[in-house]
Amino acid sequence: MPLKMQNLEEPRLDLTAMIDVVFNLIIFFMVGTRFADMEREFDVQLPQVSHAQPLMAPPDEIVINLFANGRVVVGAQEMPLTELRTLLADAQKRFEDQSVLVRCDGHGTVQLLAEVFSICQEVGLRNYSLATMVQEGGGS
Image (cartoon, rainbow, N blue to C red; front, side):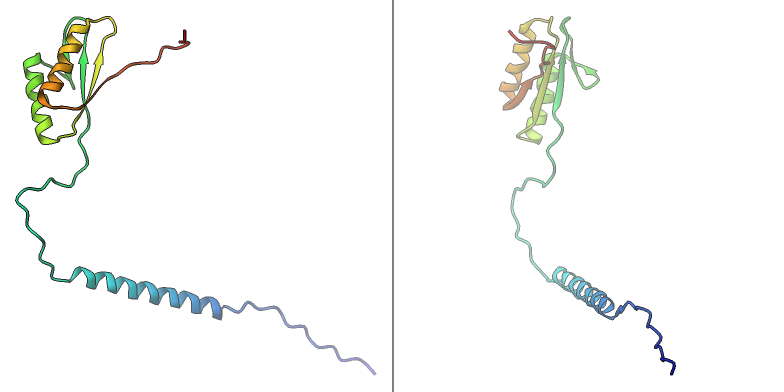
């Protein structure tokens, strides 16, 4: 009597659960998007103020280059100290925390550097600094 063999079933991957999860996620995001749209539609009367600072990023620092021969260069423009005073005063009026970086020639005089720092103090700038470079192999 011959034995009857049953055909083995091929394994199958049931995607029903995964499809249900994907549909639930789609519905969730669609409903969440609708709530965000409705929130923007509220008729809100914004408060009014007489003076407000604009919400913006602080401006780049002003870089002042002092050369050994007495030249003062801001950006690519050479200017006397009187123009520098006007430029820094205008910058301080526009942005109270305006930063200034002074790059001074190491072989120049300290007098010009002192004058520039004095101008910064006169116009009310508090955030000014002197650029230096670390000496290679330095140390005492």
